[in-house]
Length: 150
Image 1: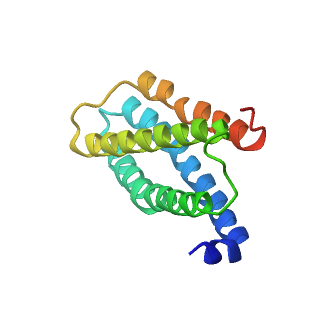
Image 2: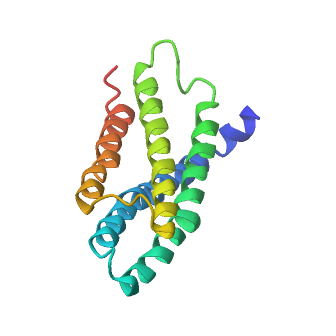
């Protein structure tokens, strides 16, 4: 298993980065769709446009991208001598932020279903506010991986 990871390390890492970029695009774009959807909640013609966009973004882009991010990330972590879990505290912070992004992703999936059913929809201001969550987590993750301050 470790030989496979070592032999394909660069390819796994490239797929991981591509998947992260795709996932982040969805995490940033979907709440923006929610803002516009919530602002036009009384206009059924506009809502009929947003519902499939939100659902397809989640199912066709975000879920596969998140899955590839996790699969490739786990493979990279299994690479021998890449991370020393006892002293590389940066990795623990990064991992926590990725878990939080995943929880946020699940929350957005629940919100997609609420927009489909029309129940429990929040205000456009709420969706504008939560749209900052992935940006903050992404900044922390990038700093942890590149700068490795701990």
